[in-house]
Length: 422
Ligand code: TTP
Ligand code: MG
Image (cartoon, rainbow, N blue to C red; front, side, top):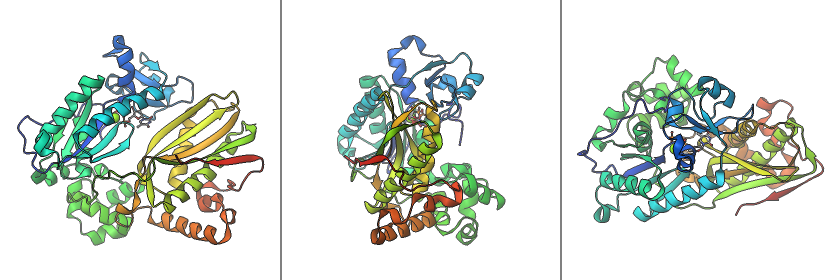
């Protein structure tokens, strides 16, 4: 998609047909950086990066002024500072961001009970029932944006549409500090010129396969018979692409959260400095977490990694998954990226943990559009085997063997596990 630097910003005029555009996607602008600016007003208008300066760290987020230089989330810090040498780098203060997140979410909760929190700074709101009290979707969105800025000093962007998928795309285009309403009747016109990458789940191999067929825009996909899509990207992905490109997205705003998170952590008897061993632990923990997600029939929207060093300093890093998942491989991929982002290799670690966050009801999506169908099935088979033969009968390594070669996932002697879903 676009570079998310605000250059392609699209917002709605005051009088727009918003009937039925009652799903709002709200996302705070440059969230961590914007919170920092509240404490450092003298830095307003300057390129500011949030992240650790040390060599191997990555950018957590950056102000739009820094994004103009090409700086973006997850970029190595060293690269970001090459692109924008005069950027001011501030270390993250996660607790503070959580507090602001709670305050913003509490504002959403006063607008409608139908709020689905997606991550620390974004949520879907279904305002179809809120109309009598607060007005039309666009009026509600304006009211909400005003309240968020008045009560917290933070700006957010809102997309309003008939479906979640389109609302989320719209908020992204409205950034920063904008509102974009996609009238329901114009959903197709809105979607069709977009690149295939705008479609949820399209990247990497799927994108390559579609490009090979000569498909470049959403309109191209909408016009392709589903049978042709099936042979290119498989049944589940074809069904999803066919629906999304035609403006259909059956997912409802989900308010119920079964649990807040599911996590496992391990305390080593002897501090670990070997990076490969930490990676192996992540693999094993990811496998456990995923297995519990599946048995609870939920999907994780995000993953967090916790590290406690020998001196007892503890840090957690989290990120959202490209899309909700209950597949060990996905949890592992994200958690190991997080571990890599921490830097400070070689520092003795006493505890490591993996936590699946932003859980949502898996049933709504599974089987409908599920590009990870094969992995999920394989892993479910493992679940069944474990039920019969015990947890250690099938190791994490055997799950992920094709990619990870010899990484051993069996229990290392000399550490204790804890399970800690709240
Ligand atoms: P985003 O909403 O993706 O990004 P943002 O709010 O900084 O910027 P914008 O929405 O205007 O494009 O993520 C919210 C916060 O989550 C972000 O401020 C920092 C954190 N985050 C990470 O820690 N790692 C990541 O890889 C990403 C994408 C975000
Ligand atoms: Mg944001």
